[in-house]
Length: 284
Image (cartoon, rainbow, N blue to C red):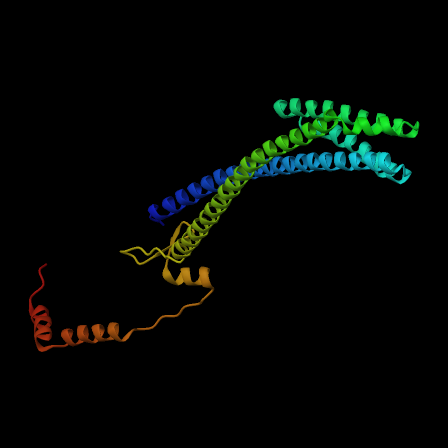
């Protein structure tokens, strides 16, 4: 049985093309997903740096309050919060060093902040020691020096500038993340469309295959049937294919044709021709 090949070839080509497109879109989806994950990680990284910078500034203020509270009142209760704040400042600055390793410019600025912070913490420790030694006036004079205020102001301004730079970097990374997520959405839509095309192609192919599967090839001259590579009679085809036994009869059309033939043979002209033929002498 010869089946037209145009439709199967087109459908197969469509399926192959759709599969290639889907593979390409899946690769892009994977790459964009990886890039989006990386961008999200950088956003989280920047937010953590901002939190650490804000914590350092807050704890420096708390350490200053504890130092001045102890000097002004002489109450040891201020030393507990002071010690906690100074220890956390050192811990947060060490963590910031690790977080800013990927950004040499910001790391250099952090090193400057660390230097100022060490100087300020050393000043806090020295004034507390003076107060403990009974040199209250000297401790107060150190606190009131312009250098003490300018040092704290420099620390705060440096922390705020570095925080502002990280905020600008955060905005850029957030925009990149949004762009990558948007591109991922477009790729997902493309995947859905490619899948829909493939499903439609499969349906068309299935319908075409079912159509061709139900075709029966008959010989135009003998009316025999091609079945499993063999030409057989229609009765045999019914028996093999559907296990249907057959019998024979005469259809009304065939019966009418037979009656017409008989009538023609029994007509007077036909009988006369037969008699003439019988009267003619046979040649020896």
